[in-house]
Length: 154
Image (cartoon, rainbow, N blue to C red; front, side, top):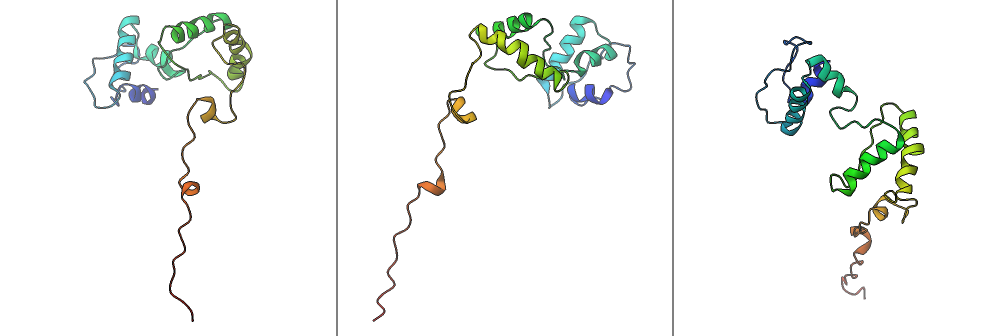
């Protein structure tokens, strides 16, 4: 338990603190400063013990968790998307494949009804569907070198 939480708070060893005590004040670190701040803010705001904090973040690794009906989940995703809070989402279902199946079968159709999720793809590749240009292939764009004359064989 301490290993996961330790990694999310900048590598600080939490094993010397009581699990049912508060998250201690932690010194700054060179890595994961924004994650450390988010975790610390959550612990303070919700008055969580180290154990409660671990249980809160274990499933989603500290990312936002959305629970509810398909409509409720779609409401939250739509709010973030429409108001500029996100331009896309990485879905991390709590279990596979069932959690992903439920998202695809229940939430995606709701987002499509709202007109904020595609109903078909424009192209055949990820690059085409993201509207990205095809990169120049260095091996097919070069012209063959002119033959070099080495003199006559007379």
